[in-house]
Length: 86
Image 1 (cartoon, helix red, strand yellow):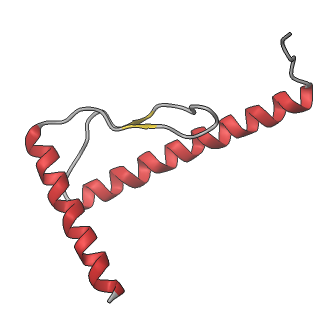
Image 2 (spheres, rainbow, N blue to C red; image 1 turned 90 degrees about the horizontal axis):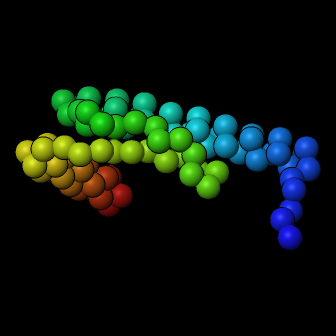
C-alpha cells in the first residue's frame, strides 16, 4: 500500500529540497572562492542538486597535478589551523 503525501507534506518536502539545493549552491560558491585564493580551479565543480533532501556538490575530475596541489593546500591549511589551536 503506497502512502500518498498530503498537500502540507508535499510543501514541506519541496521546501527541504529547495533549501538543500540552495545549500549546494552556497557550498559551490564558497569552495570556488577558496580554491581561487590558492589559484586553483576544479572545472567540473557544480551543484548536483538535492539528494535525499541534502545538498550534493559534484567535485568532478581533475589532473594529477591539480589533485596533488590541492592536497598540499589542504594540508597547509590544516597545519595552520592546528597551530591556531595551540
